[in-house]
Image (tube, rainbow, N blue to C red; front, side, top):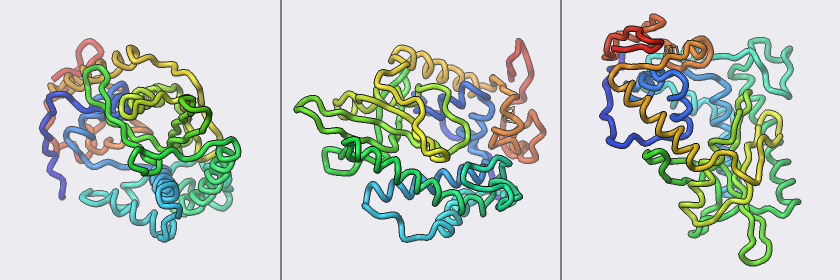
Length: 306
Ligand code: SF4
């Protein structure tokens, strides 16, 4: 077994991403096992597909070309990266989901969304993305460029919410030239999963981060769903104010601090399908759970206490 379950050193001011903040509002034991104990995680083939899609469109925006590497080789490289330093192999480290994305027929993929389905689905998503970009262009949008000329894909923004440093990576930033001082900026976040985000908190955080980093106020922000090729929750005005996001991140930070001392907020609705560290979880008898030093949890007042 290669895993040691060593607890990483806690930063004074915990750096949070939007996905960590979401995770801390779900099961904090899952967050602890992933981020602090750094236990190996399982993933889904759909997540591998999403990474392959993201990397290929980023390369296209940044260099003008899709990578020369075939999609099949690209998928294998992502799988190998995921399984590196992990006790899992492909069969137990990467999970098949039953739900196929639109464009794939169940009769062609009787096992569900597995490796073969990923290799079939990614080209379909890339075609949809081509159409999305063509529509954007027809509407007067071009890819925005950073001040040094770098095209606006995977644009990193750093800011602070609820007293925590936040780092975000905006998938695509577009620009529509208008009269001087009236240029418009659009922020896009690609989603390759089946479920649609239920709010704009991530996008509204990116608006704050983009404005703080570049001094430009975005005109709109939206998600773009790779499976359907459709926009989702695109809006000109934010829903979440800075104060609302400050509160969410401060609360996430408090929950992280509680997890540090063995007090976990448990969300058992996430155990069956969503938890990537179930094999390391002592509460469900995960077979790797003895490899990580956790305070012995007990339940009190609806919370798990050490
Ligand atoms: S298996 Fe359930 S209780 Fe355990 S870490 Fe995952 S979500 Fe939390």
